[in-house]
Length: 318
Length: 76
Image (cartoon, rainbow over all chains, first blue to last red; front, side):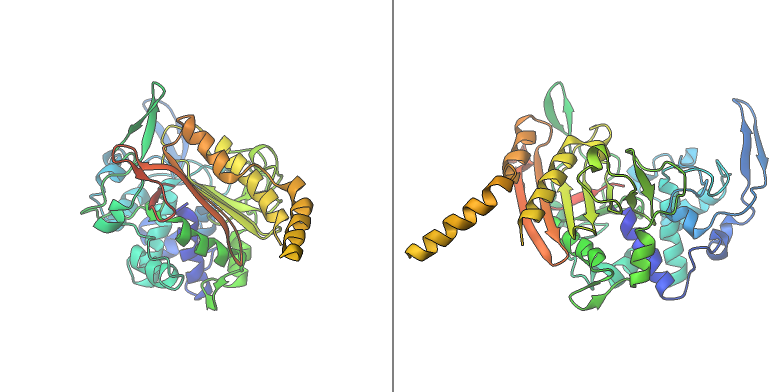
């Protein structure tokens, strides 16, 4: 659920006229110039060729860039250690060949989303965290939405649990390491937030870019973010989905999305969190839990039951 | 007073058949099953939050209740 907010940061820079979504990535991050493509791979040999075109900002926003979704071997612990800066991590990502031709496949890509965070830094001249704080969290009064929680916010945080032998067991810092002393914000998944703060961000989206008289995104940017840009590809983690800029978009409601309208959009999180917005019914749901190893959390029974409840509740209310 | 009661009764008759199970009951089911320690759930519209519910615990060992103000990690 951090990714749609990173995408919103990019679209703010589009609104500012500093980026176009069809810009080649290398225009803003020159370390990506001359990217090569893996054309064949065996256990002992990799063959590289030149891609037909370089990846664009649009490709990164839709997880179709071809940038490899695996971290470089030497950075395998980048999330748990958090000891590298965003610039250092993205520099390493830039030196790896593409896995597929840009635009030809959908493959969920955390390094790609982190790369967009670095684009925000280079284009805005601010750190990624400072840019989002000044252009989104501050104006929307999202005071508990941070990458590095204060001691007070840490004390208010929910613990994360796994389920082992039928019992819940606390897991300290799964996936991401402690934030104290961390250098790395993780634009692909590093945010902490609350139900109240997230409600304000999603209300801004349903209001097509504004909340309480403050404009965060243009109407055109919201429309672009929440439209399907993945053509005939089959993106997402459940059937019937397309992908927008940072958001999954419901193409054909079915299964867990059956209670949502076509065009609904949202995102999940690795600890089971979910948020889905239905612009046709003018409604949203937020589910905040902190559980690891739940399987496909985008297809969870808890998500389905909440959405079904919300549809009935919203339809019954004036 | 009688008029108020009558109006409430009429409103109840109109709304009752469409009401789903209470959200809190649904969320508590998942806590009781031991699938999650605690849950915060929100439904809303562009105009504001319609309903917020928090059930279960944010910290089992400390016995701290889940609450809408709890910070959660948004991994991904």
